[in-house]
Image (cartoon, rainbow, N blue to C red):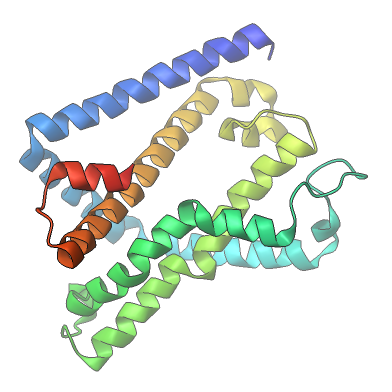
Length: 238
C-alpha cells in the first residue's frame, strides 16, 4: 500500500468512526431511555449467548502466552536483532500502570467486587451480601482484572508489535490478516476490523475515564462538601 492509499484509508476510517460515534452520542442525548434499553438488551443477549466464547477465549489466550513466553519464540525481539530497549523495565511498568490499566484499576478495583457482592448474577442463585457473594465477587473480579485480561491485551500487543517492529508494517489492526494475503488486510474485511477496533478503543477509554471521573467527583464532593455538578465531573475526567 502506497502513501496515497494509506491516507485515503485513514481518512475513510476516521470519518466512518467519527460518524458512528456522533450517531451514538446524539442518540444518547435525544433518546437516552431508548438507547439505555437497547444497550442493556444487547449486552444481556451477548453475555447469555456468547459468554462461553469469552471464557474459552480467555483460557486460550493465557495458554498461548505461556507457551510463547517459555518456548523458543519468547527469545524473539520486537525490534532488530541488535536493538536495545528504549526504556528500562521499571519505566515500562510505570507507564503501563499510569495509563489505561491505572484508570481501570483505580475505579473497577473497588467498584467491581462491591458491585458483584451487592448484585451477584441471578443465574448463580447466590444471595447478595453473604459470604458466598463475597467469594463470587472476588472470582469475577479476578477474571476481569487478573491474568486473563493481561493475556488478552498481550495477544493484540504482541501481534501488532511484531508486525511493526520486525516487519516494518504500520499499526493498523487489520495487518493481522497479512499472513493470509495483503489484499485481505487492505480490503473490506480489513477496513471493517479497523473500524470496529477504533470504535471499541474509543468507547472503552471513554467509559473508563468517565466512570473514573464520576468516582473522583463523588469522592471530591464527599470530602470537600462541594455541589454535585456536571462541570466538576468533566474537569476531573479531563
